[in-house]
Structure formats: structure tokens, C-alpha cells
Image (cartoon, rainbow, N blue to C red; front, side, top):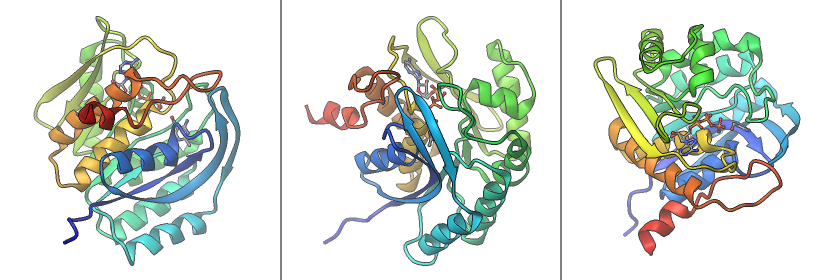
Length: 270
Ligand SMILES: Nc1ncnc2c1ncn2[C@@H]1O[C@H](COP(=O)(O)OP(=O)(O)OP(=O)(O)O)[C@@H](O)[C@H]1O
Ligand SMILES: Cc1ncc(CO)c(N)n1
């Protein structure tokens, strides 16, 4: 007998270097035993040193890929990453509504670690108007939460206030990640569900190999949601997944290397 197959779709950009974007998402889905599908929004020429080129796809190409998946395979959960421009964002929102996808994780990717823009400035308002209100979970890092709310986030109280604002926009569960906030050698992610705050804490690891941490974390949340887990459970697993992936660095490339997507599985096998 075939076990139940859970399916997740990622709508994002390709990272030729394999550490972030579509590649990180599909690897993470696979590691968590979820069948991964993809709709590409852009191709990036990228490695551990930076982004050398960004080549967006047409709106038609994005829509058709989603249509092909939605009309046949279906998806138990959907993640968005790099969407690049307002037209693509609107098209993705339209398709998410068309197929009634409720388990939607929006990772509002804006800039790569080296500073290269992965979202046009004019597209921020499209994200707020069209896509975030459909999100079950949104996973901004602190700089992204600042852009989305127009706030400066310095303290934990600021982060809580930003989470409340994003909840008002229509995000059901807001996660503001703490990778950029060094508090007592910990990396603490905050979750707001509209009523209370929860905190997911991990030891901060001193490493330069953090390329794709955000994509990998959000992909792990998506995979767990595809299996029907609660948002709290999904974030707990995602935090353990990214912690193992950062701790067991691969040390490849000459710059900010990728995380280790198979570390979490090895931890349970050894
Ligand atoms: N040095 C670190 N040690 C431990 N955990 C970390 C570290 N850096 C990031 N994390 C964790 O990794 C996850 C992703 O967080 P981060 O804030 O780095 O995302 P991001 O900035 O969106 O990543 P990306 O560079 O891929 O865009 C979070 O769970 C965060 O707590
Ligand atoms: C394609 C792509 N998506 C997301 C990120 C953010 O890590 C990246 N560097 N590249």
C-alpha cells in the first residue's frame, strides 16, 4: 500500500548556487518527505559571492506553471519566495485564490545577503495589498518587516508592534525571524497569532555560511503544514531543521556558503 503523499508547491526564483530559492525549497521538502513542485518566477545567476544576474520570467509563464499544477496534481501547502515585480505578485495572488489554497506561506523576499534586490521597490505595496492578506503564515526577517510596516525595529516591543501591524493587513500567523538580531547569543523567532506571542529560540551559531536560511526555514514550515501539522508545530520543526542545517555547515564556495539541507535527517538517523 502506498502511504499518503503530501505535496507542496514553491513559487520562487532559481538560485543557480543551490543554497536558496527554489533549490533550497525542493531540497527541504524532500528531506521532510513531502513531494515538491515548483513554479519559477525568475532565474538568478548566483553563487556564494553574490548575485551576478536576475532574469525574470513573463507573467504568462508564471501563471501557466501554477495552472498546470493546480489543475492536475494539486498542493497541500504553497510557499512563495522571490516574486520580483508587482505583476507577478498579482498573478500569483489570483491563482492562489482560484485554486483555494489556504495553507499559504509567504516569505517576503526583498534582498539577497549581499544586497542585490530580488523585489522591485514598487512591488512592496502589491505584496501588502494582494498577497499578504491571503497568507496563513508570513515570515519576514527584521529588515523586511521594517519595509512592510514603515517602522524601525530595534527592541522586542518594536518587533511585537510590527507583528501586530502585519496581522492587521491580514496575515493569520506572523513570524518575524531573529537571524538579524543578536540577543544573548540566541536567534529568536517571534510568532504572533492575533492573540499572543510565542518565541522559538535557538543557539546563535557563529558562521558565515548562512546563504538561504530564510528560504529553508519557510520551506520547512510549508512542508510541515502540507502534512497537516499546526502552525506552532510546523515552526518548531522548521526551527530545528534550520538549526541543524546551520550547525553542520558544508563549507563550500568562497563566500557565504549554503546551509546543510541533509543535516536534520542525519541527526535522527545517527
Ligand atoms: N547565525 C544563526 N544561528 C542560528 N540561527 C540562525 C542564524 N541566522 C539565522 N538563523 C535562523 O535562521 C532562520 C532564518 O532567519 P534569518 O533572519 O536569517 O532569515 P533571512 O534573513 O530571511 O534569510 P535569507 O538570508 O535567506 O534571506 C531563523 O529561524 C533564524 O532564527
Ligand atoms: C532566488 C533567491 N531567492 C531568495 C533568496 C534569499 O535568500 C536568494 N538569495 N535567491
